[in-house]
Amino acid sequence: MTATGPLAGRTIVVTRPQAQAAPLAEAIAAAGGKPLIFPLLEISPATDPQPLIEAVARLESYSLAVFISPNAVDHALPAILAHGGWPVSLKPAAVGQGTARELAAKGIFGCVVPSERFDSEALLELPEMAAESVNGRRIAIFRGDGGRELLADTLRERGASVDCITCYCRSGPSAGVQPLLAAWRSGQLDALTVSSSEGLRYLVDRLDAEGRAFLQKTPLFVPHARIAENARALGLSNIILTAAADAGILAGLGAYNWPA
Image (cartoon, one colour):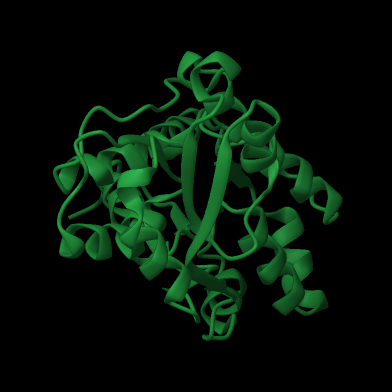
């Protein structure tokens, strides 16, 4: 049966980590496209589990627990729940809606989360993060290794005591880029979706001159202006900035003027 829909006949690369790739891939398939899952980041538990263990042990001393990503939920929440459950007095917060949904799926509701842009800047604009709300409070930030310091630094400037807990590590893909090169060479790769500047850097570093030439010509759909800026800094120019999250990426794919 011939696929129908706005993405019919298009092969779209989904570069989210393996655990988060399925929803976007399924949406692409439902729109008639062929998703090619190729994670640009591999996620693993933190090399040193002690900071997470210690944070969980003193969790009741925090007023707010911020989860930077769904990966932070996946790697921190099991330890929290195993230790005795979520403290009643602890308010959850998330940078994005996907992270908030991951918390809700595990029974943690009432999350402080931005409703439009999904980044540290948007979270900091919420009244729950204002100086009068966080001054004198203890805040835990669950994140991956090498995370941005903007959120923690700003909350400290506003009078909060902030602990950053690394609960997972990110690394480049262990698999080679041959699947992408093969798809490009056969004319069966129409676009990439990229939701991580770090992942995009890994890809560019691993491509040879032929691969970079392919990448330069391929539409790159990104859901955040910062990723678009980093893509341009890497020398890429065929960049389509979409609305946030999977829904925004899918809308951008559907609205794109694909060549005949």
